[in-house]
Image (spheres, rainbow, N blue to C red):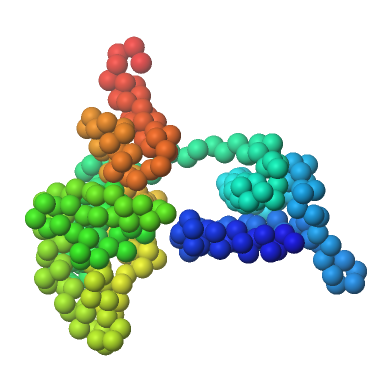
Length: 306
Protein backbone atom coordinates (compact mmCIF):
# COMPACT_ATOMS: atom_id res chain seq x y z
CA UNK A 1 0.00 0.00 0.00
CA UNK A 2 2.83 2.40 0.84
CA UNK A 3 4.30 1.81 -2.60
CA UNK A 4 1.07 3.08 -4.18
CA UNK A 5 1.05 6.17 -1.96
CA UNK A 6 4.66 6.87 -2.94
CA UNK A 7 3.71 6.76 -6.64
CA UNK A 8 0.93 9.28 -5.98
CA UNK A 9 3.33 11.51 -4.06
CA UNK A 10 5.97 11.44 -6.81
CA UNK A 11 3.30 12.39 -9.35
CA UNK A 12 2.26 15.25 -7.05
CA UNK A 13 5.87 16.47 -6.93
CA UNK A 14 6.35 16.16 -10.68
CA UNK A 15 3.09 17.61 -11.97
CA UNK A 16 1.63 19.79 -9.20
CA UNK A 17 4.72 21.16 -7.49
CA UNK A 18 6.84 20.95 -10.65
CA UNK A 19 10.04 20.22 -8.72
CA UNK A 20 13.37 19.87 -10.53
CA UNK A 21 14.71 16.48 -11.65
CA UNK A 22 17.43 16.75 -9.01
CA UNK A 23 14.89 17.35 -6.21
CA UNK A 24 12.66 14.54 -7.44
CA UNK A 25 15.66 12.20 -7.53
CA UNK A 26 16.50 13.03 -3.91
CA UNK A 27 12.91 12.48 -2.73
CA UNK A 28 12.77 9.17 -4.60
CA UNK A 29 16.06 7.94 -3.14
CA UNK A 30 15.19 9.00 0.44
CA UNK A 31 11.67 7.59 0.49
CA UNK A 32 12.55 4.33 -1.23
CA UNK A 33 15.18 3.86 1.46
CA UNK A 34 12.51 4.32 4.12
CA UNK A 35 10.19 1.96 2.24
CA UNK A 36 12.94 -0.68 2.19
CA UNK A 37 13.30 -0.28 5.94
CA UNK A 38 9.65 -0.85 6.80
CA UNK A 39 9.10 -3.51 4.12
CA UNK A 40 11.83 -5.98 4.88
CA UNK A 41 11.93 -9.18 2.78
CA UNK A 42 10.71 -12.34 4.50
CA UNK A 43 12.04 -15.89 4.18
CA UNK A 44 9.57 -16.63 1.37
CA UNK A 45 10.85 -13.64 -0.62
CA UNK A 46 7.72 -11.56 -0.05
CA UNK A 47 7.74 -8.18 1.66
CA UNK A 48 5.77 -7.60 4.81
CA UNK A 49 5.45 -3.87 5.36
CA UNK A 50 4.03 -1.95 8.29
CA UNK A 51 0.61 -0.46 7.48
CA UNK A 52 0.91 3.28 6.87
CA UNK A 53 -1.26 4.15 9.87
CA UNK A 54 1.06 2.19 12.15
CA UNK A 55 4.10 4.29 11.24
CA UNK A 56 4.86 6.34 14.34
CA UNK A 57 7.66 8.57 15.59
CA UNK A 58 9.40 5.57 17.21
CA UNK A 59 9.57 3.76 13.85
CA UNK A 60 11.04 6.88 12.26
CA UNK A 61 13.59 7.36 15.04
CA UNK A 62 14.70 3.72 14.73
CA UNK A 63 15.13 4.19 10.98
CA UNK A 64 17.20 7.33 11.53
CA UNK A 65 19.34 5.57 14.16
CA UNK A 66 20.24 2.97 11.54
CA UNK A 67 21.35 5.70 9.15
CA UNK A 68 24.07 6.98 11.48
CA UNK A 69 27.55 5.82 10.62
CA UNK A 70 27.02 5.52 6.89
CA UNK A 71 25.40 8.93 6.38
CA UNK A 72 26.35 12.49 7.23
CA UNK A 73 24.06 14.51 9.48
CA UNK A 74 23.11 16.68 6.51
CA UNK A 75 21.98 13.60 4.57
CA UNK A 76 19.97 12.27 7.52
CA UNK A 77 18.32 15.68 7.98
CA UNK A 78 17.38 15.73 4.29
CA UNK A 79 15.92 12.21 4.45
CA UNK A 80 13.82 13.18 7.49
CA UNK A 81 12.62 16.31 5.66
CA UNK A 82 11.63 14.17 2.66
CA UNK A 83 9.68 11.80 4.91
CA UNK A 84 7.98 14.71 6.70
CA UNK A 85 6.84 16.16 3.37
CA UNK A 86 5.54 12.78 2.18
CA UNK A 87 3.61 12.08 5.41
CA UNK A 88 2.17 15.61 5.35
CA UNK A 89 0.94 14.85 1.83
CA UNK A 90 -0.85 11.77 3.25
CA UNK A 91 -2.41 13.98 5.94
CA UNK A 92 -3.63 16.40 3.28
CA UNK A 93 -5.09 13.49 1.30
CA UNK A 94 -6.97 12.25 4.38
CA UNK A 95 -4.98 9.01 4.63
CA UNK A 96 -3.34 9.97 7.94
CA UNK A 97 -4.77 12.04 10.80
CA UNK A 98 -1.41 13.38 11.99
CA UNK A 99 2.14 13.54 10.73
CA UNK A 100 4.31 11.40 13.06
CA UNK A 101 7.54 12.80 11.58
CA UNK A 102 6.77 16.16 13.20
CA UNK A 103 7.53 14.57 16.56
CA UNK A 104 11.07 13.66 15.45
CA UNK A 105 13.77 16.27 15.94
CA UNK A 106 16.07 17.12 13.05
CA UNK A 107 19.75 16.29 13.73
CA UNK A 108 21.68 19.37 14.78
CA UNK A 109 23.90 20.50 11.95
CA UNK A 110 26.73 22.94 12.25
CA UNK A 111 25.94 25.48 9.61
CA UNK A 112 28.96 26.24 7.43
CA UNK A 113 29.50 29.79 6.33
CA UNK A 114 29.41 30.15 2.55
CA UNK A 115 32.76 30.41 0.77
CA UNK A 116 33.21 33.76 -0.89
CA UNK A 117 35.96 35.79 -2.51
CA UNK A 118 37.15 39.26 -1.64
CA UNK A 119 36.14 41.92 -4.16
CA UNK A 120 39.71 42.02 -5.51
CA UNK A 121 39.92 38.22 -5.87
CA UNK A 122 36.46 38.04 -7.44
CA UNK A 123 37.45 40.55 -10.13
CA UNK A 124 40.81 38.83 -10.69
CA UNK A 125 39.17 35.42 -10.98
CA UNK A 126 36.49 36.66 -13.39
CA UNK A 127 39.18 38.21 -15.61
CA UNK A 128 41.19 34.96 -15.85
CA UNK A 129 39.68 33.56 -19.13
CA UNK A 130 41.71 34.23 -22.28
CA UNK A 131 39.62 36.54 -24.47
CA UNK A 132 41.67 35.58 -27.53
CA UNK A 133 39.82 32.24 -27.63
CA UNK A 134 36.14 31.53 -28.27
CA UNK A 135 35.85 29.47 -25.07
CA UNK A 136 37.53 32.25 -23.12
CA UNK A 137 34.98 34.77 -24.39
CA UNK A 138 32.14 32.50 -23.32
CA UNK A 139 33.69 31.71 -19.93
CA UNK A 140 34.29 35.39 -19.16
CA UNK A 141 30.64 36.15 -19.96
CA UNK A 142 29.46 33.31 -17.68
CA UNK A 143 31.62 34.40 -14.74
CA UNK A 144 30.67 38.06 -15.19
CA UNK A 145 26.98 37.17 -15.36
CA UNK A 146 26.95 34.99 -12.24
CA UNK A 147 28.78 37.62 -10.20
CA UNK A 148 26.70 40.50 -11.62
CA UNK A 149 23.32 38.89 -10.91
CA UNK A 150 23.90 36.34 -8.13
CA UNK A 151 21.90 33.76 -10.07
CA UNK A 152 22.36 30.05 -9.49
CA UNK A 153 24.31 28.07 -12.08
CA UNK A 154 21.18 25.98 -12.65
CA UNK A 155 19.34 29.19 -13.54
CA UNK A 156 22.14 30.43 -15.78
CA UNK A 157 22.24 27.31 -17.97
CA UNK A 158 18.47 27.59 -18.56
CA UNK A 159 18.68 31.18 -19.86
CA UNK A 160 17.25 31.91 -23.31
CA UNK A 161 17.98 34.94 -25.47
CA UNK A 162 14.41 36.21 -24.98
CA UNK A 163 15.01 36.34 -21.21
CA UNK A 164 17.50 39.21 -21.54
CA UNK A 165 16.56 42.87 -21.94
CA UNK A 166 19.81 44.27 -23.33
CA UNK A 167 18.62 47.88 -23.35
CA UNK A 168 17.46 47.98 -19.72
CA UNK A 169 20.14 45.51 -18.56
CA UNK A 170 17.64 43.14 -16.97
CA UNK A 171 17.33 39.36 -17.10
CA UNK A 172 14.33 37.17 -16.30
CA UNK A 173 15.40 34.14 -14.30
CA UNK A 174 13.38 30.98 -13.66
CA UNK A 175 14.32 29.65 -10.24
CA UNK A 176 13.18 26.86 -7.96
CA UNK A 177 9.59 25.69 -8.39
CA UNK A 178 9.49 27.70 -11.63
CA UNK A 179 9.34 31.00 -9.73
CA UNK A 180 10.51 33.88 -11.90
CA UNK A 181 12.33 37.03 -10.85
CA UNK A 182 13.90 39.96 -12.68
CA UNK A 183 17.56 40.72 -12.01
CA UNK A 184 19.60 43.78 -13.02
CA UNK A 185 23.18 43.57 -14.28
CA UNK A 186 25.88 46.13 -15.01
CA UNK A 187 27.92 47.30 -17.97
CA UNK A 188 30.85 44.86 -17.51
CA UNK A 189 28.46 41.88 -17.69
CA UNK A 190 26.65 43.41 -20.67
CA UNK A 191 29.88 44.04 -22.57
CA UNK A 192 31.18 40.51 -21.91
CA UNK A 193 27.84 39.03 -22.92
CA UNK A 194 27.64 41.03 -26.16
CA UNK A 195 31.24 40.12 -27.03
CA UNK A 196 30.47 36.43 -26.51
CA UNK A 197 27.19 36.57 -28.47
CA UNK A 198 28.85 38.25 -31.45
CA UNK A 199 32.29 36.63 -31.49
CA UNK A 200 31.91 33.14 -30.02
CA UNK A 201 28.33 31.88 -29.95
CA UNK A 202 27.88 31.81 -33.78
CA UNK A 203 30.99 29.63 -34.06
CA UNK A 204 29.59 27.19 -31.49
CA UNK A 205 26.27 27.04 -33.36
CA UNK A 206 28.11 26.21 -36.59
CA UNK A 207 29.65 23.18 -34.87
CA UNK A 208 26.18 21.69 -34.38
CA UNK A 209 23.94 20.08 -37.01
CA UNK A 210 20.92 22.38 -37.64
CA UNK A 211 18.48 19.74 -36.35
CA UNK A 212 20.26 19.56 -32.98
CA UNK A 213 20.85 23.28 -32.40
CA UNK A 214 19.31 25.12 -29.49
CA UNK A 215 19.03 28.58 -31.06
CA UNK A 216 17.37 30.01 -27.95
CA UNK A 217 20.01 29.00 -25.39
CA UNK A 218 22.27 31.85 -24.30
CA UNK A 219 25.27 29.80 -23.20
CA UNK A 220 26.46 26.93 -25.39
CA UNK A 221 29.23 24.39 -25.25
CA UNK A 222 31.73 24.09 -28.10
CA UNK A 223 29.47 21.49 -29.78
CA UNK A 224 26.74 24.09 -30.10
CA UNK A 225 24.29 22.63 -27.56
CA UNK A 226 23.15 24.13 -24.25
CA UNK A 227 25.86 24.13 -21.61
CA UNK A 228 25.31 22.05 -18.44
CA UNK A 229 25.90 22.84 -14.76
CA UNK A 230 28.61 20.16 -14.73
CA UNK A 231 30.43 21.90 -17.58
CA UNK A 232 30.33 25.21 -15.69
CA UNK A 233 31.78 23.43 -12.64
CA UNK A 234 34.64 21.98 -14.72
CA UNK A 235 35.26 25.41 -16.23
CA UNK A 236 35.56 27.01 -12.78
CA UNK A 237 37.98 24.25 -11.67
CA UNK A 238 40.15 25.01 -14.70
CA UNK A 239 40.49 28.68 -13.78
CA UNK A 240 41.12 27.92 -10.10
CA UNK A 241 44.31 26.13 -11.21
CA UNK A 242 45.35 29.29 -13.03
CA UNK A 243 44.86 31.39 -9.86
CA UNK A 244 47.33 29.73 -7.51
CA UNK A 245 46.25 31.58 -4.36
CA UNK A 246 42.48 31.14 -4.91
CA UNK A 247 41.32 27.76 -3.64
CA UNK A 248 38.24 25.82 -2.52
CA UNK A 249 35.67 27.75 -4.52
CA UNK A 250 32.86 26.60 -6.77
CA UNK A 251 30.54 28.35 -9.24
CA UNK A 252 28.28 28.94 -6.22
CA UNK A 253 31.07 30.93 -4.56
CA UNK A 254 30.50 33.77 -7.04
CA UNK A 255 26.84 33.87 -5.97
CA UNK A 256 27.95 33.97 -2.32
CA UNK A 257 30.45 36.72 -3.18
CA UNK A 258 27.70 38.71 -4.89
CA UNK A 259 25.51 38.58 -1.77
CA UNK A 260 28.34 39.28 0.69
CA UNK A 261 29.68 42.25 -1.29
CA UNK A 262 26.19 43.76 -1.57
CA UNK A 263 25.69 43.43 2.19
CA UNK A 264 29.14 44.90 2.91
CA UNK A 265 28.22 47.86 0.70
CA UNK A 266 25.06 48.58 2.68
CA UNK A 267 22.35 46.75 0.71
CA UNK A 268 19.20 45.81 2.64
CA UNK A 269 18.95 42.14 3.58
CA UNK A 270 15.43 41.83 2.18
CA UNK A 271 16.56 43.25 -1.17
CA UNK A 272 19.35 40.66 -1.26
CA UNK A 273 16.79 37.96 -0.43
CA UNK A 274 14.72 39.07 -3.43
CA UNK A 275 17.73 39.09 -5.76
CA UNK A 276 18.88 35.64 -4.64
CA UNK A 277 15.39 34.17 -4.90
CA UNK A 278 15.39 32.85 -1.31
CA UNK A 279 11.95 31.81 -0.04
CA UNK A 280 12.89 32.59 3.58
CA UNK A 281 14.84 35.51 5.01
CA UNK A 282 16.57 33.11 7.40
CA UNK A 283 18.41 31.58 4.41
CA UNK A 284 19.76 35.00 3.43
CA UNK A 285 20.71 35.90 7.00
CA UNK A 286 23.74 33.60 6.89
CA UNK A 287 25.50 36.39 4.96
CA UNK A 288 25.24 38.63 8.01
CA UNK A 289 27.43 36.09 9.82
CA UNK A 290 30.00 36.31 7.01
CA UNK A 291 30.06 40.10 7.28
CA UNK A 292 30.24 39.91 11.08
CA UNK A 293 33.32 37.67 10.83
CA UNK A 294 34.95 40.29 8.62
CA UNK A 295 33.97 43.05 11.08
CA UNK A 296 35.52 41.14 14.00
CA UNK A 297 38.69 40.57 11.99
CA UNK A 298 38.96 44.32 11.27
CA UNK A 299 38.32 45.08 14.96
CA UNK A 300 41.00 42.63 16.12
CA UNK A 301 43.55 44.16 13.74
CA UNK A 302 42.72 47.82 14.30
CA UNK A 303 41.48 48.33 17.88
CA UNK A 304 44.25 49.07 20.42
CA UNK A 305 42.44 47.16 23.19
CA UNK A 306 41.41 44.17 21.05
